[in-house]
Image 1 (cartoon, one colour):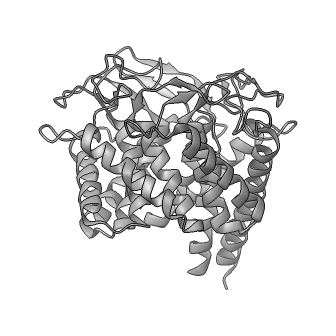
Image 2 (tube, helix red, strand yellow; image 1 turned 90 degrees about the vertical axis):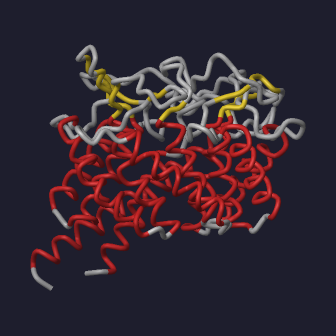
Image 3 (tube, helix red, strand yellow; image 1 turned 90 degrees about the horizontal axis):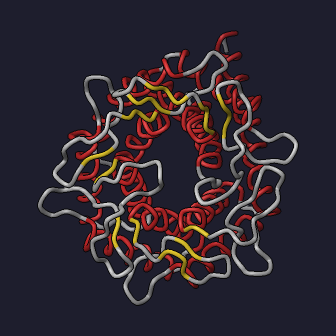
Length: 408
């Protein structure tokens, strides 16, 4: 082995070792601080000092992402506590979130498990499919697969637009039209969004990995085509975020975390279904999309949050989740191209996370930091802050490094 090859192998092994330790740290934190022993399930919010808000609402996204993270982690670790934690998440979702009367899952619950917001947000139901498929993969629990398929059929029956194509954002509990379609206050109130479509295709691909249904595959291919047709801006290789029902673009906002997440995730979805044309399309797109995010990397390795092109306004914050996606996206670009600069950028993202984002005193990751690297005083775990981006980054890096090392 040449000196250069030996150095590369050493770098990759060190990367894997560090990330493996961080995965264990993340999972341990969630098992220690999130269980709601009095009311069941998991707290809806925990702050940077590891103090829970015992009255916080419990979100479908949080619980589904916990289910996914611990199921996916168990696939690798085979550690019984990880399986037990996934089972707790599964049981809570089935008992409290599943709407047996109208189908789908509630958006949020009160801290005691009573329905808080019964709306049907497609994004949340997609994440539930994602978690249920992962849980089925490690347990062969038939009910988990049955619910996942039921939720897929509900999305297809109510959200899929057979005339204009694509998926509408939200409905009332009994699937009637709703005025406020937004995931959160910061989002535009539009009928079709890149974010929801990205996580539908992610969920569908994960479901396909355990249920090889031809109609499901057809819908995954259709979703991938929508990204190639509408969502990707082929002039600047950022992803368009908001559309009305007729696919008229309604936003000039650029979200760098979503860009680099889509760069690798859409390629992965195409690979899961084994669709060669889609694989080639999104392997080719991965590099220019990832390239488009480089200018948004600060000198310390952190990725800025968003840019509003219409007002030429940058949001100078470094949220934790885009850093996690940058780790994967840059390493994926290295795997696609073989260019060493991409590996360096992935390692730089990891270095920034180690130095700035990981809460060294109390565990887990901060929400993010401001322009001057001051800690953002937002929850460490909550409605949106889950072990999904951080845990998935660790798992993806481990898998990808092992793949790279196997070829040396």
